[in-house]
Amino acid sequence: MRHGLLTANRLALLVPAALMAGALGSQYLGGLYPCEMCHWQRWPHYAAIALALLAFLLPVPARRALVLLAAAAIAISGLIGVFHAGVEYGWWPGITGCTSTVRMGGSTEDMLKNILAAPMVRCDVAQWRLVGISLAGWNALISLIGAVTVARLAVKR
Image (cartoon, rainbow, N blue to C red; front, side, top):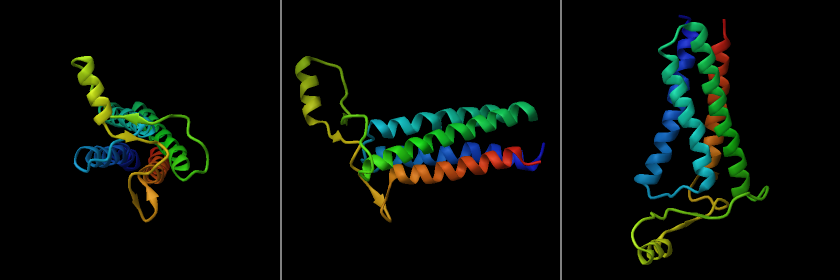
């Protein structure tokens, strides 16, 4: 197997896995609740991880195709991140309302208490920034750079 394709396959797994580790860590360890658009960014990363893992099991032509699909999934997450960051910075309006982390179940009274006690997470307000860039912005940057790098390595002869 060509070295470039193997490296592309590894990156197609590493980039979304690292971004998901950061997202889930910030949620479960850092207490940052994801909004609806945050969840939208996660789905393509889950798909990219699955595609990259499956690619390791296949011969070169099929592997290349799956790695390129994983790169496309990573890029899709990055594009959603661009949109989400734009909403956070007020560059354009969002298309969702606020979301909540309510756990359903139990009696109606319990559900109402859960709804009232749950934090509201707005898609147009960044919960955390590093050097002025929100988590959505970082996802956009890392995902788009990662997707281009994976795709270039996968097609390199």
